Image 1 (cartoon, rainbow, N blue to C red):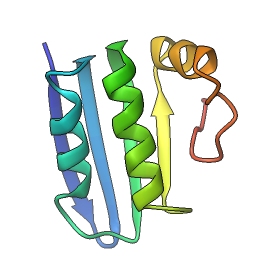
Image 2: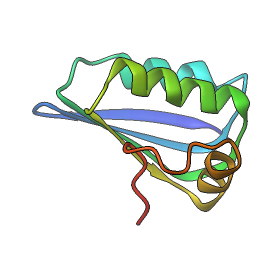
Image 3: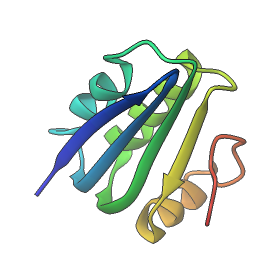
Length: 96
């Protein structure tokens, strides 16, 4: 089951996404992250179990819109997909 929620703390927006991010849910994830203006955005994907090309595209679009302001916290599945797609070394990707 997919969910995306956002919490604004001052100038920091934290977006927590769980479940499957695919072509049916990727835009909801993107729009949730862009809903509130913020100086910093953390996209917490540690609860994501499936991540497809639509999800990759949404994260890349988000990174383009928020240069140097985005932090992505990935699940193991998300890391694997980003590594396969050649995005495993992006500055916005923060592995725990």
